[in-house]
Length: 139
Image (cartoon, rainbow, N blue to C red; front, side):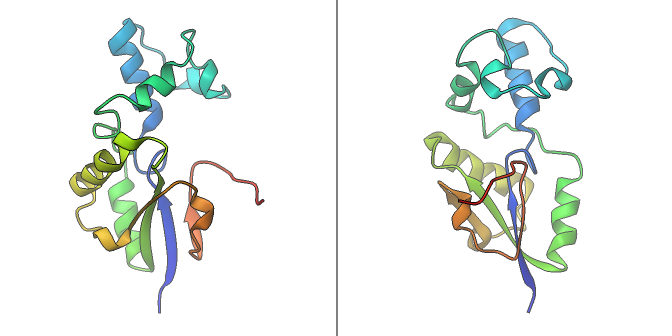
């Protein structure tokens, strides 16, 4: 029996930071490098207050997320050794549920709906391992 592994979508498979920078350039004509976001809290990314939150509620934000280079090959390789589940805390952003499902179908058609978990809090996920871009402290 294979061990289980949960893989977060945003920031692991899908490049949310690049999407935010692309949306900002689209709206303001200013192209910031990725390093602009490093070490900053989300609310301090840009001078405009609440902009990142506005973007994640915008239709199409999650549907058009750029794929992180090598993500497909990495997931396929992991599937050789683990039962892989794609896990995303998607409930906070209602539009994201359908958009993330479509995005996964486009980029990861080999992941079945049985192995996709959308939730509000990933702490409920009890796999052997989890790959996530955010470190969570227990309790």
